[in-house]
Length: 172
Image 1 (tube, one colour):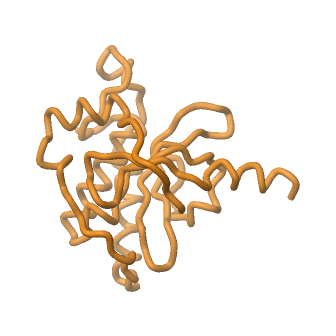
Image 2: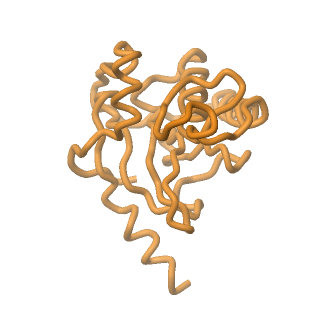
């Protein structure tokens, strides 16, 4: 996934950061993405499936009476909440903030959606509450818009080749 310039932070993430400041100012050195071991992949797959199973999908409107509330889910939440929980659990298991990036995408129906991107030497992989399998980002149906910056968990960057991927796959 090729990223571009720094861009706007989603409002829900901004408000989340006001409550969880320590999680939104993690600075990471620019490094090559790490190679994930078989044990690491097993952990990634387990956390994805576990959170998908434990959390009931509901909209922010249903849960909080308003849109764009990013929060750690108790037992229900929307896509951003799933992402936050997966990120937290993987960080507890030793993955770094610079490798676990909240990513904003557009689904084929045009609706906005959030997934967790895991940066690895094997490529960028997506953990999604709509899919129990962990997939390479290019094997998902989404148009990638922006994600957290790997160098700063409170900053966001554009995804340069996200739109090209969708357009390039139309003729296939």
